Structure formats: structure tokens, C-alpha cells
Length: 108
Image (cartoon, helix red, strand yellow):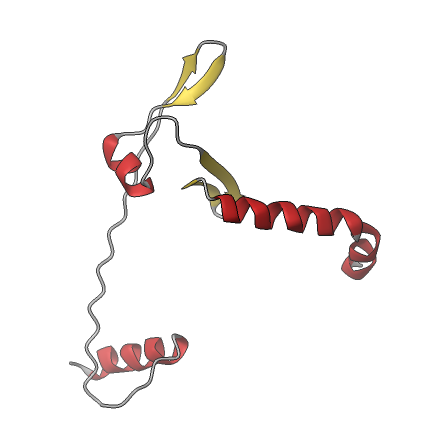
């Protein structure tokens, strides 16, 4: 392993708070990015998209399952529905609504 690779490995271990017990660090990272272009189609009086099989498998969804479309700084993110996550979002929305004046003052 080159010195540059060791430096990256140590930095990564530090960021992930992993114990470093030896100078020989082996990192096996497998990155696969699934990028799919979807076409918007008219479905009755609505618009929809059809997920290719690979995307449905990656999301672990099937016919009739719910998906969540979330706005992020990078764009829109499509994820499988998670009931626990929805409860957390609803609780956050209630808190934001209840303390909106205080939050507005703090934002100044």
C-alpha cells in the first residue's frame, strides 16, 4: 500500500472513528451507482413515471408500495416509504409550527 493510500485510509478511519491498531490497513470499498432516467407519462388525468425493474429492486418496492419524493440541496431524492420516518417528519412539523415565532427570532 502506498503512503498516499495509507494516509487516505487513516483519515477515513479517523472520520469514521474506527480504531487503528496496525499500520497495514486494508479498505475494500465497492461503489455502485445506479442512475436511471425516468420519463414522465400521462396516467389518466395525472402524471407518473414507470420504475425499471433494477430501480424497483434497489428501492425494495413493488406494485402498490408508497414512495417518498424529498427535496435535497442536490435535487430531488426518491426513497421507499418509511412509516417511522413519516412520524418523525410530522413531529418536526408540529414543533416548527408551535415554535415558529421563536425560530423566526433565532434565525435573525
